[in-house]
Amino acid sequence: MKSKKQATLELVKLCCRALDEKKAGDLRVLDVSAQSSITDYLVIATATSEPHLRALRVELEKVIDASKTRIVGVETAQESGWTVIDLFDLMVHLFSAERRAQYGLENLWKDATEVSIAKLLAVAKPKPAVKPKPAVKPKPAVKRVPAIRKKPAAKK
Image (cartoon, rainbow, N blue to C red; front, side):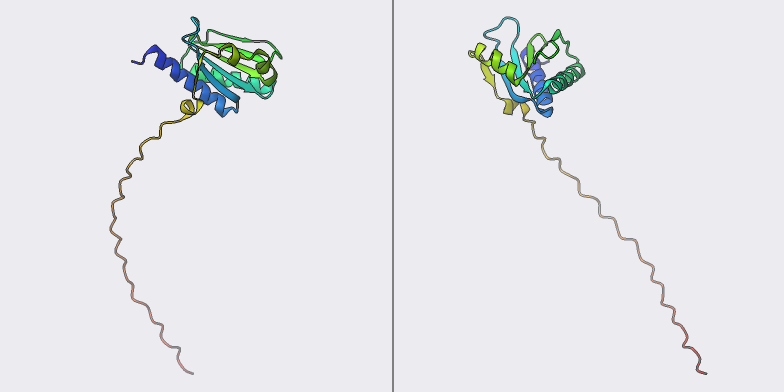
């Protein structure tokens, strides 16, 4: 059985992959377990517009639901430029570029450990499967039909 920390990290990976596939900008993950008593990880991402912000939230909700993880809460206000999805051990913050610069969560949590996005998004390469060689099928015998010769036309 996976430990709580491993399960949370798997959820972080799922969220990061979903955000990356939906073209979220400046994706960052902070391990705040040493600084916070309410959550272990913060995922922070930037949307290019309000519709993009909604699309990121909807995609995350689909991925989270598919993983059978309970969403504790979603906080978003119309045109606020900031959406928070609370998954208890993980909190996802989606910002517009202006709101992200305004609130500067990375600076508030500067003592947190940053988790490498490249490692989170890396997919373990499966070992190449050895393809069995197809059995050599014997070629069917070709029946040779003797050529039919036409009789030369009779001379008149």
